[in-house]
Length: 392
Image (cartoon, one colour):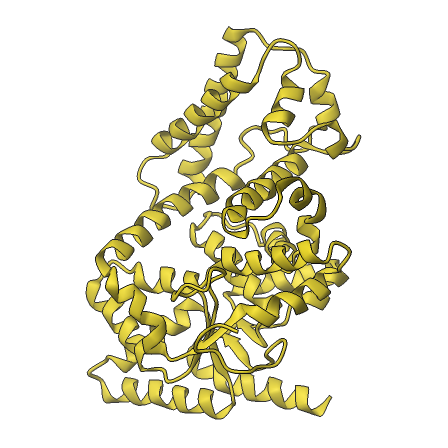
């Protein structure tokens, strides 16, 4: 149990994760000089508390709330969070005095999955939840952020910029070969150097065009973003591709061998596997688990957060503009595996609806998800949901 924590149920039915936009609106109203707005926020706080709900927060809430360009707005949001007498948060896996992130949440899951190699995702969730939460005051949760206020705000803004680029690159089909089978690529011929250069130039042009046309409008230069990405791809490719079998060397560079793939494994599948393998590598710096056993025992389809994250990514409605906030929305969506109620935006809500229809596993793992155009509607929604639960 983390310091400051209190005894709690395994999966808290009244932990409520609000959307960052709702928290920002409440904070703005609380700080307003308009008495009606202040009263509106106070009425919400009273009704929220009366429902028995406890606000559940994670690092990504702070990232969204405190990255606002206005110092005054960011300070208002901090003041609101400081005023809350009791909040729940994802704990730091290392028991540090700071709110945990999606990476912390997944670390708890990985540790549980490693200890029980045959456990289902539902059992992994139950075990991970035993150590995942911290109950404390809003003031205590905010305090570490105030110690490094300027540095953190700058870091959040830089992270936002990078996130916009990551979303645009990941959603673009500039290569046009996501469905290509790995076995076919292994048998493919090696391209001549000039042919490779021309191919990269074509890919750069396609990616830059996609970013200009559909990327987050806050990306300042689509060509620069595409060029920097392609430069990294060329650098990595030059290190791993050799005349003997470039496809096999790509597998090896990503930490895989032929036993890890099947006849129908596609390049997109391998990309997902590689991303998860990289996550394991990064998180294992703190987990400190034996690497061969870790990659053998822990697969992403046994981690609740992995199942939820990938489903939301897959079923998220395709919008004309690839908003950089979509990545953070996926991280926050992972809270749905543990919160009693999770509030999301309308597009993420639709992704949850579709995922529940397509996957029984997802439906069993994800808790209740709501959307609200205004925070005024939330207490009524919570009261109705909790009453329905109590009646069943």
